[in-house]
Amino acid sequence: MKRVRLLAGAGAMAVLAGCQPPSTKPVLPKETPAPTPEVTPVVATSTPSPTPIPVPALPRKPVELGRMFNGITFQTKFATPASDELASIERTQDNAYEVQVTFTARLPRASKSLEDLAKNDPKLPHVLNQMPSLVENAKVSPFFEKLYSNKIESIRSQLFQLDEVLSRHNFYDCETMLELTSPDTGRKALLLIGDMDVNVDGTDGDRNVPVDDSGRFFQPQTSYRWKRTTDRINPLLPRYQQKLADFKREYAVPGLTAARNKELQQAIDQTTRTINDLKTYSFLISSTDPSIVIPTFMINDKEDPFAPKVGDYAAVIYNGVVYPAIVGDAGPSAKIGEASIRLAREINPKASSIARPVSNIKVAYLVFPGTADPATQPNLADWRAKCKKYLDEIGGTAPELFSWPDIVPPWPTPTPTPTPTPTPEPSPSPAPSSSPEGSPAAGASPAATVNPNFIIETPQPSATPMPSGSPTPAASPSPSPTAPQPAVITPADASAPPSNP
Image 1 (spheres, rainbow, N blue to C red):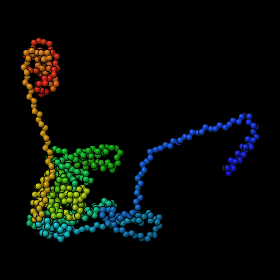
Image 2: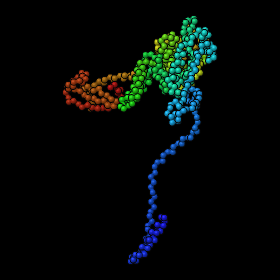
Image 3: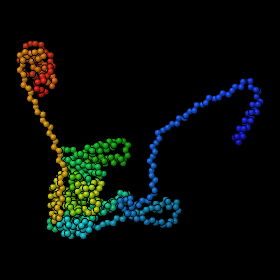
Image 4: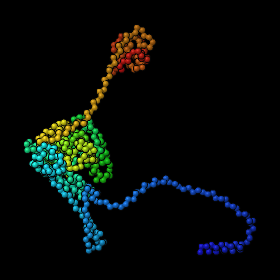
Protein backbone atom coordinates (compact mmCIF):
# COMPACT_ATOMS: atom_id res chain seq x y z
CA MET A 1 0.00 0.00 0.00
CA LYS A 2 2.81 2.42 0.76
CA ARG A 3 4.39 1.81 -2.64
CA VAL A 4 1.09 2.46 -4.47
CA ARG A 5 0.56 5.74 -2.69
CA LEU A 6 3.98 6.97 -3.60
CA LEU A 7 3.47 6.18 -7.24
CA ALA A 8 0.10 7.83 -7.26
CA GLY A 9 1.50 10.90 -5.70
CA ALA A 10 4.24 11.10 -8.32
CA GLY A 11 1.69 10.91 -11.20
CA ALA A 12 -0.35 13.69 -9.67
CA MET A 13 2.73 15.85 -9.42
CA ALA A 14 3.47 15.29 -13.10
CA VAL A 15 -0.07 16.35 -14.21
CA LEU A 16 0.07 19.53 -12.17
CA ALA A 17 3.47 20.33 -13.56
CA GLY A 18 2.11 20.11 -17.11
CA CYS A 19 -0.51 22.78 -16.41
CA GLN A 20 2.01 25.46 -15.36
CA PRO A 21 3.23 28.07 -17.87
CA PRO A 22 6.68 27.57 -19.31
CA SER A 23 9.40 29.06 -17.26
CA THR A 24 11.32 32.07 -18.70
CA LYS A 25 14.40 31.44 -16.58
CA PRO A 26 17.30 29.87 -18.33
CA VAL A 27 17.92 26.35 -17.50
CA LEU A 28 21.06 26.22 -15.44
CA PRO A 29 23.10 23.14 -15.16
CA LYS A 30 22.69 21.38 -11.94
CA GLU A 31 25.49 22.00 -9.52
CA THR A 32 27.24 19.00 -8.27
CA PRO A 33 26.99 19.20 -4.51
CA ALA A 34 30.25 19.23 -2.69
CA PRO A 35 30.92 16.01 -1.04
CA THR A 36 30.05 16.04 2.61
CA PRO A 37 33.12 15.29 4.65
CA GLU A 38 32.83 12.12 6.57
CA VAL A 39 32.65 12.70 10.27
CA THR A 40 34.15 9.97 12.32
CA PRO A 41 31.89 9.56 15.29
CA VAL A 42 33.69 9.88 18.60
CA VAL A 43 32.85 6.98 20.77
CA ALA A 44 33.37 7.57 24.48
CA THR A 45 35.55 4.83 25.86
CA SER A 46 35.77 3.83 29.48
CA THR A 47 38.38 1.84 31.33
CA PRO A 48 37.36 -1.75 30.92
CA SER A 49 36.47 -3.50 34.14
CA PRO A 50 38.75 -6.38 35.03
CA THR A 51 37.43 -9.68 33.92
CA PRO A 52 36.09 -11.42 37.00
CA ILE A 53 37.60 -14.74 37.84
CA PRO A 54 35.02 -17.32 36.94
CA VAL A 55 33.64 -19.24 39.86
CA PRO A 56 34.16 -22.90 39.20
CA ALA A 57 30.97 -24.83 38.88
CA LEU A 58 31.01 -27.40 41.62
CA PRO A 59 28.84 -30.42 41.23
CA ARG A 60 26.18 -30.76 43.87
CA LYS A 61 27.36 -33.19 46.47
CA PRO A 62 25.48 -34.29 49.57
CA VAL A 63 27.34 -33.75 52.83
CA GLU A 64 27.17 -36.21 55.68
CA LEU A 65 25.98 -34.43 58.79
CA GLY A 66 28.17 -36.71 60.87
CA ARG A 67 31.25 -35.12 59.31
CA MET A 68 30.14 -31.60 60.15
CA PHE A 69 29.89 -31.57 63.93
CA ASN A 70 32.83 -32.49 66.17
CA GLY A 71 32.92 -36.19 65.40
CA ILE A 72 29.25 -36.78 66.26
CA THR A 73 27.72 -39.77 64.46
CA PHE A 74 24.28 -39.11 62.96
CA GLN A 75 21.72 -41.84 62.51
CA THR A 76 18.55 -40.86 60.65
CA LYS A 77 15.06 -42.36 60.46
CA PHE A 78 12.58 -40.93 57.94
CA ALA A 79 8.88 -41.29 58.89
CA THR A 80 5.87 -40.34 56.70
CA PRO A 81 2.64 -40.86 58.67
CA ALA A 82 -0.61 -40.16 56.79
CA SER A 83 -2.59 -37.03 57.66
CA ASP A 84 -6.26 -36.07 57.39
CA GLU A 85 -5.37 -32.41 56.69
CA LEU A 86 -4.81 -30.68 53.39
CA ALA A 87 -1.36 -29.46 52.33
CA SER A 88 -2.44 -25.83 52.80
CA ILE A 89 -3.16 -26.67 56.44
CA GLU A 90 -0.11 -28.87 57.10
CA ARG A 91 2.19 -26.13 55.83
CA THR A 92 1.20 -24.00 58.79
CA GLN A 93 1.80 -26.73 61.40
CA ASP A 94 5.32 -26.80 62.91
CA ASN A 95 5.21 -30.45 63.87
CA ALA A 96 4.12 -31.56 60.40
CA TYR A 97 7.65 -31.20 59.00
CA GLU A 98 10.34 -31.52 61.66
CA VAL A 99 13.54 -33.23 62.69
CA GLN A 100 13.72 -34.79 66.12
CA VAL A 101 17.29 -35.12 67.44
CA THR A 102 18.22 -37.64 70.08
CA PHE A 103 21.74 -36.91 71.33
CA THR A 104 23.28 -40.02 72.89
CA ALA A 105 26.52 -39.90 74.87
CA ARG A 106 27.38 -43.11 76.65
CA LEU A 107 29.07 -42.46 79.99
CA PRO A 108 32.29 -44.44 80.51
CA ARG A 109 33.22 -46.19 83.70
CA ALA A 110 36.40 -45.27 85.53
CA SER A 111 39.33 -47.67 85.41
CA LYS A 112 40.01 -48.87 88.93
CA SER A 113 42.12 -52.02 88.70
CA LEU A 114 45.68 -52.73 87.75
CA GLU A 115 44.38 -54.64 84.73
CA ASP A 116 42.42 -51.59 83.57
CA LEU A 117 45.48 -49.38 83.88
CA ALA A 118 47.70 -51.86 82.05
CA LYS A 119 45.14 -52.25 79.27
CA ASN A 120 45.42 -48.53 78.51
CA ASP A 121 49.17 -48.11 79.22
CA PRO A 122 51.25 -51.25 79.86
CA LYS A 123 54.16 -49.18 81.25
CA LEU A 124 52.19 -47.30 83.90
CA PRO A 125 51.89 -50.14 86.51
CA HIS A 126 55.69 -50.45 86.55
CA VAL A 127 56.48 -46.76 87.17
CA LEU A 128 55.48 -46.59 90.85
CA ASN A 129 57.15 -49.19 93.02
CA GLN A 130 54.05 -49.80 95.13
CA MET A 131 51.48 -49.40 92.36
CA PRO A 132 49.77 -52.79 93.01
CA SER A 133 49.09 -52.06 96.67
CA LEU A 134 48.17 -48.43 95.98
CA VAL A 135 45.58 -49.40 93.35
CA GLU A 136 44.24 -52.28 95.42
CA ASN A 137 43.16 -49.89 98.15
CA ALA A 138 42.25 -47.02 95.79
CA LYS A 139 38.81 -45.48 95.48
CA VAL A 140 37.34 -43.78 92.42
CA SER A 141 37.20 -40.08 93.16
CA PRO A 142 33.76 -38.42 93.10
CA PHE A 143 35.43 -35.81 90.90
CA PHE A 144 35.24 -38.33 88.03
CA GLU A 145 31.45 -38.44 88.11
CA LYS A 146 31.28 -34.67 88.59
CA LEU A 147 33.53 -34.09 85.57
CA TYR A 148 31.23 -36.06 83.27
CA SER A 149 28.21 -34.38 84.82
CA ASN A 150 29.76 -31.04 83.83
CA LYS A 151 30.28 -32.35 80.31
CA ILE A 152 26.60 -33.31 80.07
CA GLU A 153 25.47 -29.88 81.24
CA SER A 154 27.77 -28.24 78.74
CA ILE A 155 26.28 -30.25 75.86
CA ARG A 156 22.70 -29.70 77.05
CA SER A 157 23.21 -25.93 76.97
CA GLN A 158 24.46 -26.09 73.37
CA LEU A 159 22.12 -28.60 71.74
CA PHE A 160 20.96 -26.00 69.22
CA GLN A 161 24.58 -25.26 68.27
CA LEU A 162 25.89 -28.69 67.45
CA ASP A 163 29.06 -27.27 65.93
CA GLU A 164 29.98 -25.81 69.34
CA VAL A 165 29.29 -28.72 71.66
CA LEU A 166 32.14 -30.70 73.18
CA SER A 167 33.84 -32.79 70.57
CA ARG A 168 34.02 -36.56 70.86
CA HIS A 169 37.71 -36.09 71.74
CA ASN A 170 36.99 -33.69 74.63
CA PHE A 171 34.03 -35.67 75.94
CA TYR A 172 36.10 -38.83 76.35
CA ASP A 173 39.26 -37.20 77.72
CA CYS A 174 39.43 -38.80 81.18
CA GLU A 175 40.10 -42.48 81.86
CA THR A 176 39.93 -42.38 85.63
CA MET A 177 40.47 -40.47 88.85
CA LEU A 178 41.76 -42.62 91.68
CA GLU A 179 42.36 -41.63 95.30
CA LEU A 180 45.62 -43.28 96.36
CA THR A 181 46.85 -43.50 99.96
CA SER A 182 50.13 -45.04 101.09
CA PRO A 183 49.51 -47.66 103.80
CA ASP A 184 52.93 -46.89 105.29
CA THR A 185 53.08 -43.09 105.42
CA GLY A 186 49.50 -42.03 104.85
CA ARG A 187 50.59 -39.79 101.97
CA LYS A 188 47.65 -39.00 99.73
CA ALA A 189 47.81 -38.69 95.95
CA LEU A 190 45.15 -38.17 93.29
CA LEU A 191 45.80 -40.08 90.04
CA LEU A 192 44.17 -38.64 86.92
CA ILE A 193 44.62 -40.23 83.49
CA GLY A 194 43.79 -38.27 80.37
CA ASP A 195 45.25 -36.75 77.22
CA MET A 196 47.36 -33.57 77.07
CA ASP A 197 46.45 -30.21 75.59
CA VAL A 198 48.67 -27.11 75.76
CA ASN A 199 48.29 -24.10 78.03
CA VAL A 200 50.33 -21.10 76.82
CA ASP A 201 49.35 -18.57 79.52
CA GLY A 202 51.54 -16.45 81.76
CA THR A 203 54.09 -13.65 81.73
CA ASP A 204 56.66 -12.30 84.16
CA GLY A 205 58.32 -8.90 83.86
CA ASP A 206 60.91 -9.76 86.53
CA ARG A 207 62.48 -12.53 84.43
CA ASN A 208 64.28 -12.15 81.11
CA VAL A 209 61.92 -14.31 79.06
CA PRO A 210 60.10 -13.20 75.88
CA VAL A 211 56.45 -14.23 75.81
CA ASP A 212 54.51 -15.32 72.73
CA ASP A 213 50.98 -13.99 73.21
CA SER A 214 49.75 -14.82 69.70
CA GLY A 215 47.70 -17.82 70.82
CA ARG A 216 43.95 -17.46 70.41
CA PHE A 217 43.23 -18.21 74.06
CA PHE A 218 46.33 -16.61 75.59
CA GLN A 219 45.97 -14.96 78.99
CA PRO A 220 48.83 -13.00 80.61
CA GLN A 221 47.93 -14.25 84.11
CA THR A 222 47.99 -17.67 85.73
CA SER A 223 46.38 -18.74 88.98
CA TYR A 224 49.84 -19.33 90.45
CA ARG A 225 51.24 -15.83 91.11
CA TRP A 226 53.50 -13.95 93.48
CA LYS A 227 54.33 -10.34 94.31
CA ARG A 228 56.69 -8.63 91.92
CA THR A 229 60.28 -8.22 93.11
CA THR A 230 61.69 -5.63 90.65
CA ASP A 231 60.67 -2.35 89.07
CA ARG A 232 60.94 -3.69 85.52
CA ILE A 233 57.84 -3.11 83.41
CA ASN A 234 55.94 -6.19 82.31
CA PRO A 235 56.47 -6.42 78.53
CA LEU A 236 52.72 -6.81 77.92
CA LEU A 237 51.66 -3.85 80.09
CA PRO A 238 51.92 -1.16 77.36
CA ARG A 239 49.82 -3.28 75.02
CA TYR A 240 46.99 -3.65 77.53
CA GLN A 241 47.17 0.04 78.40
CA GLN A 242 46.69 0.82 74.71
CA LYS A 243 43.75 -1.62 74.57
CA LEU A 244 42.14 0.15 77.52
CA ALA A 245 42.56 3.56 75.85
CA ASP A 246 40.99 2.23 72.63
CA PHE A 247 38.02 0.76 74.49
CA LYS A 248 37.42 4.00 76.39
CA ARG A 249 37.69 6.07 73.20
CA GLU A 250 35.04 3.96 71.47
CA TYR A 251 32.85 3.90 74.57
CA ALA A 252 32.75 7.72 74.51
CA VAL A 253 31.35 7.79 70.96
CA PRO A 254 27.65 8.72 71.07
CA GLY A 255 25.02 6.63 69.33
CA LEU A 256 26.39 3.15 70.00
CA THR A 257 23.92 0.35 70.53
CA ALA A 258 23.16 -0.81 74.04
CA ALA A 259 24.66 -4.21 73.25
CA ARG A 260 27.94 -2.66 72.07
CA ASN A 261 28.11 -0.38 75.10
CA LYS A 262 27.69 -3.41 77.33
CA GLU A 263 30.48 -5.27 75.53
CA LEU A 264 32.79 -2.25 75.82
CA GLN A 265 32.06 -1.81 79.52
CA GLN A 266 32.89 -5.45 80.17
CA ALA A 267 36.09 -5.13 78.13
CA ILE A 268 37.08 -1.98 80.05
CA ASP A 269 36.53 -3.71 83.42
CA GLN A 270 38.45 -6.84 82.42
CA THR A 271 41.35 -4.92 80.88
CA THR A 272 41.59 -2.69 83.95
CA ARG A 273 41.90 -5.77 86.18
CA THR A 274 44.55 -7.23 83.88
CA ILE A 275 46.58 -4.02 84.02
CA ASN A 276 46.44 -3.99 87.83
CA ASP A 277 47.57 -7.63 87.91
CA LEU A 278 50.49 -6.98 85.56
CA LYS A 279 51.63 -4.10 87.76
CA THR A 280 51.33 -6.09 90.99
CA TYR A 281 52.16 -9.75 90.28
CA SER A 282 54.44 -12.07 88.39
CA PHE A 283 53.11 -15.29 86.86
CA LEU A 284 54.30 -18.61 85.54
CA ILE A 285 55.65 -18.62 81.99
CA SER A 286 54.46 -21.51 79.86
CA SER A 287 57.71 -21.82 77.90
CA THR A 288 59.94 -22.10 80.99
CA ASP A 289 57.88 -23.47 83.92
CA PRO A 290 56.59 -27.08 83.91
CA SER A 291 53.04 -26.94 85.22
CA ILE A 292 49.63 -28.54 84.74
CA VAL A 293 46.04 -27.30 84.68
CA ILE A 294 43.27 -28.73 86.88
CA PRO A 295 39.52 -28.12 86.34
CA THR A 296 38.25 -25.17 88.34
CA PHE A 297 35.50 -27.09 90.12
CA MET A 298 38.10 -29.39 91.68
CA ILE A 299 40.32 -26.54 92.86
CA ASN A 300 37.35 -24.71 94.37
CA ASP A 301 36.27 -27.74 96.41
CA LYS A 302 36.78 -27.04 100.13
CA GLU A 303 35.61 -30.39 101.52
CA ASP A 304 37.33 -33.23 99.67
CA PRO A 305 40.74 -34.04 101.22
CA PHE A 306 41.98 -35.12 97.78
CA ALA A 307 41.02 -31.84 96.11
CA PRO A 308 44.06 -30.32 94.36
CA LYS A 309 44.98 -26.69 94.94
CA VAL A 310 47.04 -24.21 92.97
CA GLY A 311 50.68 -24.73 93.86
CA ASP A 312 50.36 -28.40 94.81
CA TYR A 313 53.25 -30.53 93.62
CA ALA A 314 52.60 -33.11 90.91
CA ALA A 315 54.31 -35.76 88.81
CA VAL A 316 53.39 -36.24 85.16
CA ILE A 317 53.98 -39.78 83.87
CA TYR A 318 54.13 -40.59 80.17
CA ASN A 319 55.82 -43.42 78.29
CA GLY A 320 57.63 -44.53 81.43
CA VAL A 321 59.15 -41.11 82.24
CA VAL A 322 58.27 -39.14 85.39
CA TYR A 323 58.33 -35.31 85.12
CA PRO A 324 58.10 -33.05 88.21
CA ALA A 325 55.64 -30.17 88.00
CA ILE A 326 53.18 -28.08 90.00
CA VAL A 327 49.50 -27.23 89.63
CA GLY A 328 49.83 -23.85 87.97
CA ASP A 329 46.38 -22.90 86.74
CA ALA A 330 42.65 -23.57 86.91
CA GLY A 331 40.94 -24.56 83.69
CA PRO A 332 37.49 -25.35 82.23
CA SER A 333 35.30 -27.50 84.43
CA ALA A 334 34.24 -29.81 81.58
CA LYS A 335 37.73 -30.77 80.35
CA ILE A 336 40.86 -32.32 81.79
CA GLY A 337 44.44 -32.86 80.67
CA GLU A 338 46.43 -29.70 80.02
CA ALA A 339 50.07 -28.70 80.60
CA SER A 340 52.47 -25.86 79.91
CA ILE A 341 54.37 -25.73 76.65
CA ARG A 342 57.63 -26.52 78.50
CA LEU A 343 56.25 -29.85 79.65
CA ALA A 344 54.37 -30.52 76.41
CA ARG A 345 57.44 -30.05 74.19
CA GLU A 346 59.56 -32.29 76.38
CA ILE A 347 57.06 -35.05 75.59
CA ASN A 348 56.51 -34.03 71.96
CA PRO A 349 58.75 -31.37 70.35
CA LYS A 350 56.02 -30.56 67.81
CA ALA A 351 53.58 -29.37 70.48
CA SER A 352 52.26 -25.83 70.12
CA SER A 353 49.25 -23.71 70.96
CA ILE A 354 47.37 -25.46 68.13
CA ALA A 355 48.95 -28.92 68.30
CA ARG A 356 48.48 -31.12 71.36
CA PRO A 357 51.43 -33.33 72.31
CA VAL A 358 49.36 -36.41 73.23
CA SER A 359 45.94 -37.22 71.78
CA ASN A 360 45.57 -40.66 73.34
CA ILE A 361 44.35 -41.02 76.92
CA LYS A 362 47.72 -42.20 78.19
CA VAL A 363 49.06 -39.33 80.34
CA ALA A 364 48.99 -39.86 84.10
CA TYR A 365 48.85 -36.80 86.38
CA LEU A 366 49.73 -37.67 89.98
CA VAL A 367 48.85 -34.72 92.25
CA PHE A 368 49.82 -34.49 95.92
CA PRO A 369 47.01 -32.52 97.61
CA GLY A 370 47.86 -30.18 100.43
CA THR A 371 51.53 -29.78 99.50
CA ALA A 372 51.48 -26.24 98.08
CA ASP A 373 54.13 -23.85 99.38
CA PRO A 374 53.73 -20.06 99.33
CA ALA A 375 54.04 -18.96 95.72
CA THR A 376 57.47 -17.64 94.74
CA GLN A 377 59.55 -17.32 91.60
CA PRO A 378 60.02 -20.87 90.23
CA ASN A 379 63.03 -22.84 91.43
CA LEU A 380 63.05 -25.99 89.33
CA ALA A 381 65.65 -27.77 91.45
CA ASP A 382 63.56 -27.18 94.55
CA TRP A 383 60.42 -28.34 92.73
CA ARG A 384 62.14 -31.59 91.80
CA ALA A 385 63.33 -32.19 95.35
CA LYS A 386 59.81 -31.67 96.72
CA CYS A 387 58.25 -33.97 94.12
CA LYS A 388 60.80 -36.68 94.85
CA LYS A 389 60.08 -36.40 98.56
CA TYR A 390 56.34 -36.95 98.03
CA LEU A 391 56.91 -39.75 95.51
CA ASP A 392 59.14 -41.49 98.02
CA GLU A 393 56.36 -41.22 100.59
CA ILE A 394 54.16 -43.40 98.36
CA GLY A 395 56.92 -45.91 97.64
CA GLY A 396 59.11 -44.13 95.10
CA THR A 397 59.48 -44.61 91.37
CA ALA A 398 61.35 -47.21 89.33
CA PRO A 399 62.69 -44.71 86.76
CA GLU A 400 64.77 -41.75 87.88
CA LEU A 401 62.79 -38.54 88.29
CA PHE A 402 63.39 -36.18 85.38
CA SER A 403 65.55 -33.08 86.04
CA TRP A 404 64.54 -29.77 84.50
CA PRO A 405 67.43 -27.48 83.48
CA ASP A 406 66.87 -23.81 84.23
CA ILE A 407 66.63 -22.11 80.82
CA VAL A 408 65.84 -18.58 82.02
CA PRO A 409 68.77 -16.35 80.98
CA PRO A 410 69.99 -13.73 83.45
CA TRP A 411 69.50 -10.08 82.71
CA PRO A 412 72.50 -8.61 80.89
CA THR A 413 74.84 -6.67 83.16
CA PRO A 414 74.69 -2.98 82.21
CA THR A 415 77.99 -1.52 80.99
CA PRO A 416 79.15 1.13 83.48
CA THR A 417 79.60 4.63 82.11
CA PRO A 418 83.33 5.55 82.24
CA THR A 419 84.18 8.39 84.62
CA PRO A 420 86.01 11.20 82.78
CA THR A 421 89.57 11.82 84.02
CA PRO A 422 89.92 15.42 85.25
CA THR A 423 92.51 17.50 83.36
CA PRO A 424 94.87 19.39 85.70
CA GLU A 425 94.67 23.15 85.43
CA PRO A 426 97.87 24.87 84.18
CA SER A 427 99.95 26.82 86.69
CA PRO A 428 99.53 30.61 86.38
CA SER A 429 102.45 32.30 84.60
CA PRO A 430 104.18 35.25 86.35
CA ALA A 431 103.11 38.66 85.16
CA PRO A 432 105.52 40.16 82.61
CA SER A 433 107.48 43.28 83.54
CA SER A 434 106.21 45.12 80.51
CA SER A 435 102.94 44.87 78.68
CA PRO A 436 103.44 44.38 74.98
CA GLU A 437 100.76 45.39 72.59
CA GLY A 438 97.90 43.01 72.73
CA SER A 439 98.77 41.76 76.26
CA PRO A 440 96.88 42.61 79.45
CA ALA A 441 98.07 45.56 81.43
CA ALA A 442 100.08 44.93 84.56
CA GLY A 443 97.94 44.18 87.55
CA ALA A 444 94.83 43.48 85.45
CA SER A 445 92.77 40.37 86.21
CA PRO A 446 91.96 38.55 82.96
CA ALA A 447 88.59 36.77 82.79
CA ALA A 448 88.91 32.98 82.88
CA THR A 449 86.81 32.35 79.75
CA VAL A 450 88.61 29.85 77.53
CA ASN A 451 87.70 27.91 74.42
CA PRO A 452 89.94 25.82 72.15
CA ASN A 453 90.54 28.68 69.70
CA PHE A 454 90.39 32.01 71.53
CA ILE A 455 91.05 33.52 74.93
CA ILE A 456 88.92 36.46 75.93
CA GLU A 457 90.88 38.72 78.23
CA THR A 458 88.95 41.51 79.92
CA PRO A 459 91.00 43.78 82.25
CA GLN A 460 89.03 44.88 85.27
CA PRO A 461 90.50 47.93 87.15
CA SER A 462 90.07 47.67 90.88
CA ALA A 463 88.74 51.22 91.03
CA THR A 464 85.57 50.10 89.22
CA PRO A 465 82.97 48.79 91.70
CA MET A 466 81.63 45.27 90.95
CA PRO A 467 77.95 45.01 90.04
CA SER A 468 75.62 43.20 92.40
CA GLY A 469 75.45 39.46 91.86
CA SER A 470 78.82 39.16 90.08
CA PRO A 471 81.58 37.01 91.51
CA THR A 472 84.23 38.98 93.44
CA PRO A 473 87.63 38.76 91.71
CA ALA A 474 90.71 37.83 93.62
CA ALA A 475 92.55 40.74 95.27
CA SER A 476 95.25 42.25 93.07
CA PRO A 477 97.57 45.26 93.45
CA SER A 478 96.00 48.52 92.38
CA PRO A 479 97.24 49.56 88.95
CA SER A 480 98.22 53.05 88.03
CA PRO A 481 95.16 55.12 87.22
CA THR A 482 94.68 54.55 83.51
CA ALA A 483 91.67 54.38 81.29
CA PRO A 484 89.98 50.97 81.08
CA GLN A 485 91.15 48.94 78.09
CA PRO A 486 88.71 47.12 75.85
CA ALA A 487 88.62 43.33 75.80
CA VAL A 488 91.18 41.88 73.42
CA ILE A 489 90.61 38.56 71.64
CA THR A 490 93.86 36.81 70.80
CA PRO A 491 94.52 33.37 69.37
CA ALA A 492 95.21 30.79 72.03
CA ASP A 493 98.75 29.65 72.39
CA ALA A 494 98.92 26.27 70.66
CA SER A 495 101.71 25.18 72.92
CA ALA A 496 99.79 25.86 76.13
CA PRO A 497 97.68 22.97 77.49
CA PRO A 498 93.90 23.57 77.46
CA SER A 499 92.25 24.39 80.75
CA ASN A 500 88.91 23.12 82.01
CA PRO A 501 86.00 25.43 81.39
